[in-house]
Length: 275
Image (tube, rainbow, N blue to C red; front, side, top):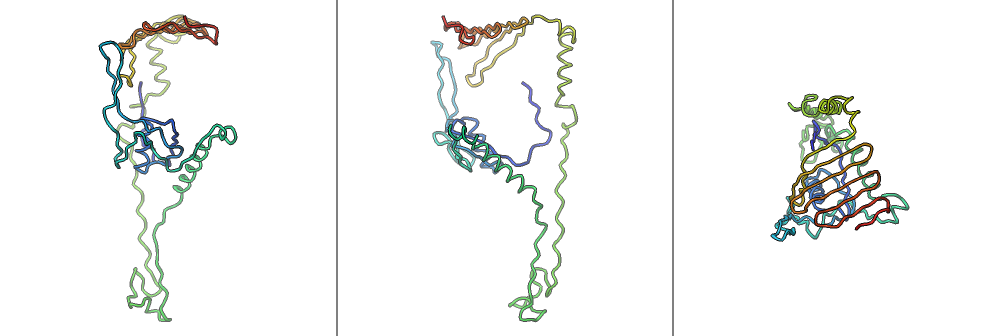
């Protein structure tokens, strides 16, 4: 998988939606954005399921998952069994979804619109304080007899200095066009060159793809082989240590899935059964 980040970071208004099913990295992400003041969080209290864990393979072949640490935010808040509390709590039910749509999405869009509007307001260039003459005497503007307080002399006040212009954001050295983010056209041309051109691609009736598979959450890796034949036949074989060999065959809308340590299952719109 390739990732091509934006050349310039997004600095505009940001609202994040969470609910009771948001857990693990989603909770950590919401907490970091809220605590840093970068985003407003809207929705329900999250699940509170963030304990880091590891998975090991036992001598019997079984897998054991165990927690080994606690996650604490930079401000010292524990998320496990507590969840993250949004800035604006909006509950969502099936009845509300059917009646008025998604109330959390509606509230989030409203807050986002408010933040965008506030960001567009011009900043205050400066403040001028005018002091009226005391008892009709233009030389006296305060009880303590200091007529030049706040830069004012009687009714005349010096204007504030002009605001400094915002700094100009310069693109990074790696932001040159096409340097780190190839265009879709370039990717397609590279693929066509690899298969021998457009005519060769259109004439293909079958192909074999060989690669690796990784299950990061379980710490497992393995090999994968994909066999495809036009118009709609395919077979996928994955050999993963700890899970065994998984085979998946598809013909049209029918799909058969089997494991070396399990039973055969087949699905095709209710026309097949497991055996």
